[in-house]
Image 1 (cartoon, rainbow, N blue to C red):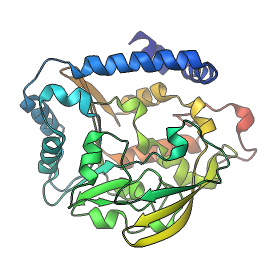
Image 2 (image 1 turned 90 degrees about the horizontal axis):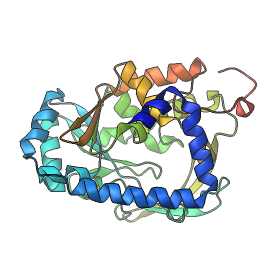
Image 3 (image 1 turned 60 degrees about the vertical axis):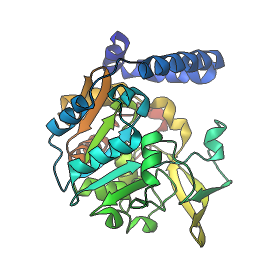
Image 4 (image 1 turned 180 degrees about the vertical axis):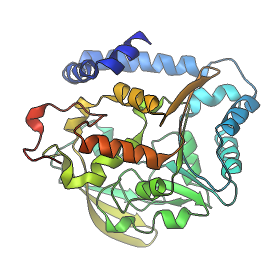
Length: 318
């Protein structure tokens, strides 16, 4: 907790830690082992009645008709004694038949599995809309496989959705080449003032939505060489086609300042972070307000979730 507070106030410390860890394999292995121990400990937490979680979610004022994006991790939620299917059903009750439930259904391609991220990728990755497993947790992997759920055909950071807006969410994404750009399903959700829920995971390192700003600004993003191309073969039932997208280069991840970012969002009232019976639960009440705030901060010269050295900036202003 103390280190978290320090990093919130001194983002350069988080950047330094990332860069050092990137060069020291031993530190990575120690971190992985400690992380495994933590996860095992979390999974063995004392049992709590599921109504504690359900009542808390109701208190967040998620309403019928809302678009709700849910990021999740099942292990910390085991203390409530609920199976993934039961958690999904409770979330569907919150938004009702007139609402839309959305979850990330990201794939891991070979480049990710091997821990190698070529900055000038020439590999053609295969994304099978109906078969590629999601690495975004057991709950989301269970969710996108439901018969009533539609999964995005866009290969980078795909979403899955069911409900009144499920088809509309994905209607324009084929026109774009950025996962969170103007035609993306993420942008659609933001424009509709979606709410975002983080169940069992800390928001600070799980807010995919924060990257709306860099993709929406695109060539007005102030850092040079930000994107790389990725090439995909997309299999969608009987249809097979190719697509080239742009994503942020992995190099820039060393300059992430996630602690400071979540701190600033909390200060602005755009993010709520709490623990319910030791389980981390976070909430963004209006994604559009978050998008506008983060984008404006970038236009003003503060990238918020990145602390990029000035030598990498473009000469021109945004």
